[in-house]
Amino acid sequence: MGKVVVLGSLHMDVMVYAPDRPRKGETLRGSGWGLRCGGKGGNQAVQAAVHGAEVAMISRVGDDDFGQQLLANLRAHGVNTEAVLLDASAGSGMSVAIVDETGDYGAVIVSGVNMHMDAADIDRTLPLIQAADVLVLQYEVPLETVALAAQAAASAGTTVVLNAAPAYPPPPGLLLYVDILVVNEVEGEMLSGRTITDRESALAIAAQLAQQVRAVILTLGGAGAIVAAAGTVYHLPAYKVDVVDTHGAGDAFVGALASQLSSGIALDRAVRYASAAGALMCAKTPPVPEKMQALLAN
Image (tube, rainbow, N blue to C red; front, side, top):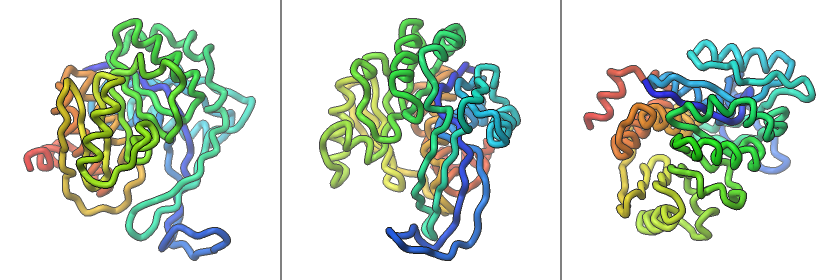
């Protein structure tokens, strides 16, 4: 079992189900709502643990009900929360996500104490970061903190996986410390300055980005993923499932990827495994070994 550390966000997601996402000034009648523990960091930590890794989370929560629920969710999934700081200076992070009838969604996040993470969080957790096999990072906390964490991990030989989401330009020097960059279409276009129009353009963007890091994974939703590593670029088709909603699929991919890499699994096999995990998340099917193996056998 490999060791994964996730430094990132914890949000309580308010999920709203509606026939479509409203236009400006439009009010729609929804079909339901619910609360779901999330944040890209929290989601990825849970998924890494679900897929067998020993996982620790570095983050902050507010002194409120949402914060307690977020901590309880991590612990229920076996994630070590000793490095999650209780910060009473602001509220816990939260978001509102509207899921339409196709299963696609849009969301607004209110980051709260997630945006208070700073160099002190790196200093207090440095031994944890440097003892990890894989450090997973995203962009829902201050980018300067992300860069400091990546540098600390790289100095110890820890593999750094950066999910460059949401789509922001990276701070200067960050990519020097990143081993594996995971982006979706929007993020890939922003980082490359190019537009994805077809598979060939996606392959070209992944190859371009791979000049800055050891490997790039460009996820394309139902169209699969592009992998660029060691001078090769290839397309991996998506696994076919009945989509319920796509919320959390990208985080399931990243968490599963980290779990496999932490155990020494080769990148190509780890990406295929992560693709299956993301597909099962879209189908809202638990990623039990039998389900995973059935997809991987196709």
